[in-house]
Amino acid sequence: MKVNTEKISFDEPLNLKSGEVLHGFDLMTETYGELSDAKDNAVLVCHAFSGNHHAAGKKDGEKKPGWWDELIGDGKTIDTKKFFVVALNNIGGCHGSTGPATTENKLNQHNGANFPEVSVSDWVKTQKLLADHFGIDCWEMVAGGSLGGMQALQWGISYPDKVKKVAIIAASSKISTQNIALNEVAREIIRKDENFHNGDYLSKEVSPKKGLKAARMLGHITYLSESNMSKRFGRRLQDPDNKIDADVNYEVENYLQYKGEQFANTFDANSYILMTKAMDSFDPAKDFDNDLVKCLKTIKAKLLIVSFDSDWLFPKEYGVEIQMSAIKAGINSSYIELEGDYGHDSFLFYSEKYSAALKNFLNSDG
Amino acid sequence: MDSTLQKIVLDWIPSQSKVIDFGCGDGILLKILSEQKSITGYGVENDPDKINACIINGVSVIQQDIDAGIHNYKGMGFDVAVMASSIQCLRKPKDAMKNILKVANECVITLPNFGNWELRLGILNGKMPSSDQLPAKWYETKNLHLCTIADFEELCSEESFVIKKKVYLNRKGKSSWLANRLPNLFAAQAVYLIG
Image (cartoon, rainbow over all chains, first blue to last red; front, side):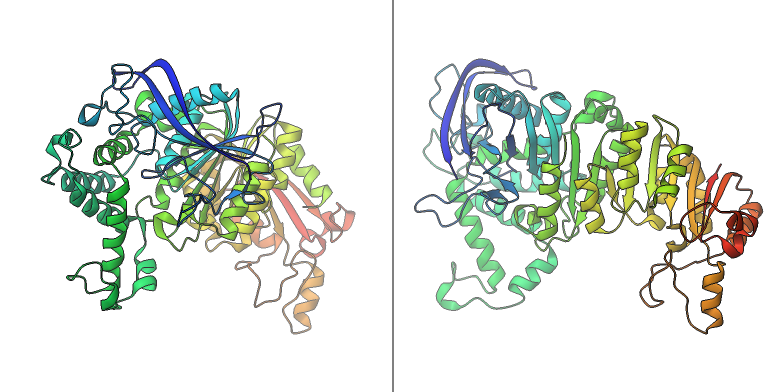
């Protein structure tokens, strides 16, 4: 599989939904496979809340491959022998694209807590500029899970003629009240870290890692299902030799501590707040008199909506809601409900039926 | 769905209409309808393998249990609802019939006739009968409410479901003199347009 990691700079000003302007920005990108001469085999994969441009393959020194490695690669569900797959880190993120933690500040750019609010439709706008950069007129498919699924849906709405198929996986057309509440608890945990300094921690050369870690621990619970946690950890006590912390009793505690710690070392607190806010505010129907049917009528692409039965963060009712609105709107759309062992995170992992659905959809006639 | 039956259904469904097919299987009927009559079609199916077949066929499909979900499709602007050989698989066929007529202006229903002589002979033999239309063994069949043509038409008249058109087909899937003369005995299946 041909892999190309590249930071691409865009000089034009980007008018954000919030009314603010980004005077130029960088996108960290990674591509897999090769773009055909006709440039008609391109697939865009959009990352979820904490994802990034590294979607597939394993780099030297890495413990784990990219976040969608089980599905992207030579001969895999999204076959890189056939398709040119584009992944990127969204603006506002913290893995190389312009965001709160970037310091290059080449064109009067905000940083830190002053980084402007970004929305899902802003990300899609930058992804369109990225398509233009590659000379891709129309994506064969835009796909994503969770917050990535929201971007896929937004693609169909924002650029109806520029995408043929849209795969919305473990996502919704807007998140639930409970999700907003959970996000706010996570944000509050970060804000209350003594090193947060109203988001201005970088200039003080500190980092609100404790807050970030605890926020991630809470988030992580919501990504898994109860049965998955029981199966994986049960009530087993943590082996004393491998305790991350003396206070830890159970394996599940140790696991969350470890995952939280790992995350806090690689993620930026302002990005966390910005990403969750973008998720909270996503509601494309708002621009169409709060009528999702009217909103979906703008879509020309074929939709595939996938829900997982063990996902309680984005339960299947949200997938069904998009599908029923799509039927009312008379657009081409299919809905499938899959067994997933991993709760909300099921979208990240290969399963036979999941792979078959996505593969058949991607390879069906446009 | 065999060719005679398919031709009848194709004839009855108007061009450009919005069609919902309950128990759509691999979606082949919707695919043919969209190719030949430019319909906008949606299938409802609960079997993941069949849903995958629909996706391969490029047919829009929703995974749902028909009994639980049929009433959700009211007010969605469907012109025609199709229920091909699936009414007898439902837990509440009468309620489903009432609901289906609220979902669409008209519905096409195909029915395996349990009154067919071959099946009657099977019963006389003292065993649950099987036929081309009803091949499954009693312990693996999805059919919960098998009925005869006479039973079904009695329900329609009791519930004032108007049968606008009907065709009786013999074991070979063809319209025949015998099947039309004594449908309850000689027809293997019936096709109805109900409004």
